[in-house]
Length: 410
Image 1: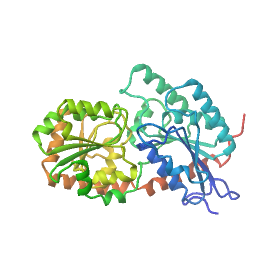
Image 2: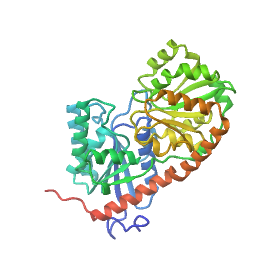
Image 3: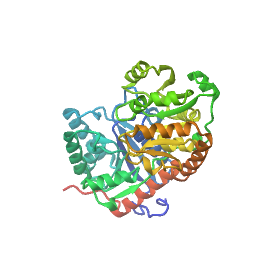
Image 4: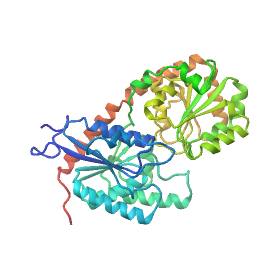
């Protein structure tokens, strides 16, 4: 059987499959997790590939993607001790379990994601002598969003894991710059691959009057939507702060939050206490396949995260022809092209944020123009098939360079 298109069979003439294992901490509903699930399901359809995904237990208000992979034979394995919080005993057990599993499975390439699985997974892959180790930087694990001690610890952990990494995939060039500035890897070890998704459901999204009625929205309401976990650093409090300006200047403006999380009750109480309870709608947990319906009833999509590699909510909104407003954080500026697909706002500049949102709220033709250009950009860069194909070819090149042979024990 032939190898990957555009490259020679990475295993040589005698073998037909390259065995790929993805390792991620949890399969909650979130950008990195959706990216990983789309990737492994896409790779299952590619010639010459055998793929598996390993994750820890998934629980909590964020929802779960496990059902998308659990029932497919040989695809999913859960490591119960692989948990998100730092837990020395469980971390040691998880590392041992991963090493044993990898030695038994004998993959040709391990691809890790997220903080905990990214660290333990790469250590385990090195101990198991996996030929090629790849890590995706979905978002920064260090930066100004946390204190000095945490920054020092996580930067040191990334440098250690980085020394065991053959190649980094970044969802935005901003991640490459940050990691190189922290002396993690070399420039030729990085490849940017945008986080793809199914475009068609967003392109077909419409202003669903039935959904609007169910949510309590009138036909004339101007909906500013935010799609994100209700969690710290996601920026929901920024909209609380500018609420008086927004609601006074645009009486028919409503905020619609799509997502769930530990801050839901606190946010509901805060908006109610400020007198905006009737102007802010919490849709709660929405399954990924239903998100396009909610995007369809939004007029503007806003994203104000202070820590995110490249938020999928932005290209998803753009695919539905919605203008976007985002804080200039990490990779947001690589898709929110100021004055073309939306407005990029300096992080924390609430006056500018209010101005841009009201400008869009009051100008339907501007919304249409930015939305049209955004949709074209999303179609060119964010198709799921393109992401999977780019990874497929990258794996082939890396395995070809490694000679397709397992590292021998020393």
